[in-house]
Length: 195
Image: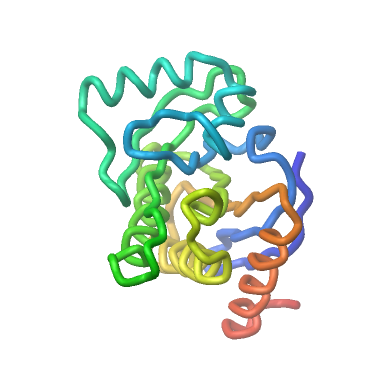
């Protein structure tokens, strides 16, 4: 179970949270996997998801790519969750950081927004997302936090009646959690939410 670090409650009642813990242990309806376009889940978050959830997640992912082709950057695919405590895995393909001039920010925003839209379309109530692209893909953590939290706020503003009521940003390492904590606290102060 992850620990709640900070929470922003939107006017719609939807919750945006920063949590510290193991994404693969989250009991949300779905978790987001930081995937590559081939859905080859070797290292990082993706590798941890398959290790804990079982080979069936990789098998379903391989079958998805066989049927539909590689997942474009910024887009998502959905599989079952194997032995994970969640119901589904939304595989979001974030960009590889190339210095910021190759559309990386737009692609990361799309990956987050499409994950949220997919959860909404599937009528899920809760979703946990990692710091997509900020690990081996090299996306700067501060900018990653700004983009992902902004996407969550924009989603809640546009879809206040969505079944999706809780959006978690769950990361295990303290430096990443601290960056997300600082960004959500900044946004909460900006929006005049409770401290």
